[in-house]
Length: 88
Image (cartoon, rainbow, N blue to C red):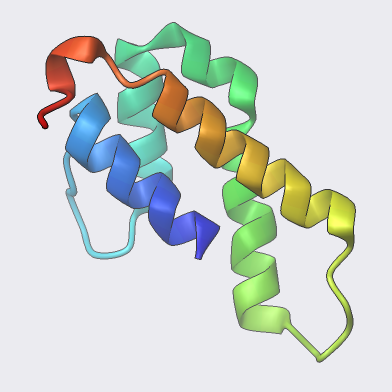
């Protein structure tokens, strides 16, 4: 779910464009070029972790630390949305 939120937020609010289906790597790279602070969030590393969890999940518990890290990253993405992109 957090992976989907990353994609949605980066496209809607950070101006990233979809070039091919399911290419979150390219979406992250585009957004990072426009907004340097995104580089500090480790989005590519989190994308890889999320993909691993989605495609290789074997029923094991996901560590609370991992869940909190994803939630904090979504929070940082939301807090960093440029004011000019927010519509009420």
